[in-house]
Length: 309
Length: 121
Image (tube, rainbow over all chains, first blue to last red):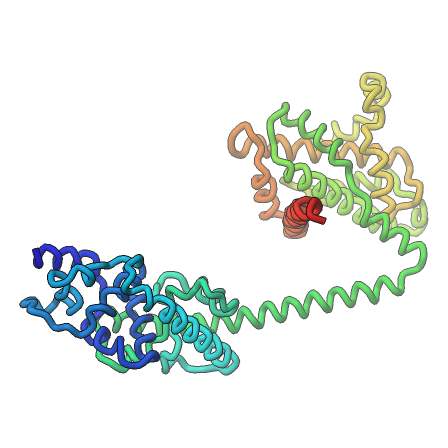
């Protein structure tokens, strides 16, 4: 019976950390939080169950001959209450709120720390914040940290205490990788921040330039600009044409928008080019555009590849 | 350049075409085209012949675009295809189309939200 339960438990908690962490689980809230975090990090799905079990079966060293099995499993055959691995067990329900509170505290602490860190350029020597439990997804972590959302609670946790202690093989590897990744991620994040700040700045500058330009427009220019902005091809007409050209094939609404905008841009390209050609000759300037201007412009653009497919 | 010659030869056949399709007499792109050309820098009253040529060019452009889009992929025409063509050649057009499509998405969302909130208000 006991061996059967042990095996079950081992299957369930194969990825659990060692006994050491469970010993320090109880004493202080802080340490227990980190242990909690560590354990939750180690085994995401079974995290709660692990908490449950380890809490109830804290430091009972059992008659278990197999040293590998964590102490928590030993209690199983003795009392039914301690066999439970589910969240729903009543005896353990008292622990849950505390856990959550501790988690929240640590998360807010984490956020503050990371914010501070982000402001200084730091070497990734001290793993005060572990940005990610999973090596694969650094990008997700960036967003989680910068937006400081609670949903990240289950996953990433500080590992200070764990690092100090002798970590297991798995954790050593994760540590090193997380450290490396953390530094890379930080650099990327800073770059992104600069970029977004730069982009916003750039947009702002462009906007101001545009404003300045518009202020200095003559009436005629303003009028023309307004017409330029507002003119467009009727979507109904474009749709009708597209239906005709595609032999009534179905297409999404976005395609109509795209084609209409492309058509307008083509017209713009041609007209601008034609105007340049017209203005190149003095005698034809200030007169309406003539077909041969358009034709010439069209040939030129086709040659240059602007209107090519 | 054969295409272009046929394109501009349509000027001559325009009368015949007009009689053939009385309902799309001026192809209703004409009015929009007139204002558009003014917006781009031509006179307030561009010459008709110019507009004819331009209209022919635009129609030809749309036609070729549609036909090429049909070739790529299945008989259906997908929006992504269009955009992907133009990536290669024209970044200006591509970014413009991208902006427009994203804006239309946002507008749709905004309208949806507005409609949801409206009954409550």
